[in-house]
Image (tube, rainbow, N blue to C red; front, side):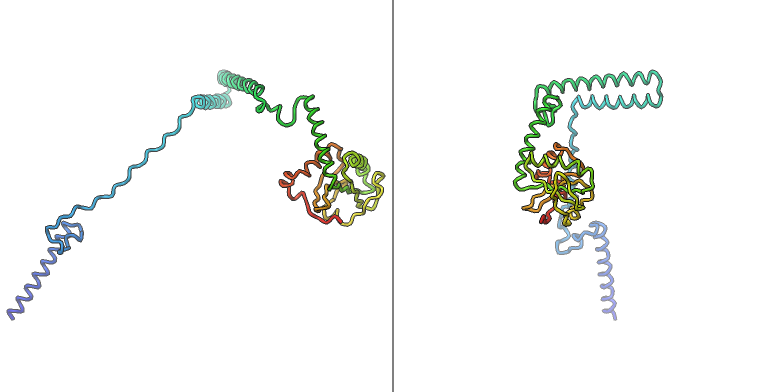
Length: 277
């Protein structure tokens, strides 16, 4: 019996000792495994874990300095708008006069810029808009149009080797009768064959033996006459040139544009592949 009491007393003391050890570990180690690791020894020294250090923040990139002229322009623009708004809301003589004086200054500065830009253009041909594209001078425009007409005539003559013009008409259409002589002269002058297609079986004095419509007009959605199409029988390509009465110069311009491969790529739906037989 005495021996049993000794065993119980030792067990209670061991439990109390273990509880004290855990409490000390919690108090001194903050829950660290180092205090509860008896294998390291009670006198083992460890450096505390270093706290994470945040990387230094990058300094914001400095904004590029504006040119003085830009700063001056922005100030002038803001001032002009402010004067105008004040004059609109409160149109006293002083407010309106102040706005008009500043506006006159701005207009004078813009006029000076225009004069300098004009002189620069005169001295630099590649910057002169009057030398780019269609001239504005009457004599130069006459030369330009003559050269353009000859160039288009040569290109139309080259088209005549493998292209034809389809002319859709009706025998009772007065506009078709008025347009037919122009097409006949165009064919004789430029060598581009015109194939007349009658949609009602009638004829024209300039084209006494037209072909009858075999359904091609419906395929091309011809709902108005006169109508002209440029066709290449070898490939089956056909594209509209125009509807209504056209002049010879209009025919030249439109045919040259329709036959241009670059414009065909821009408007692919305008060119169709059909059977021309």
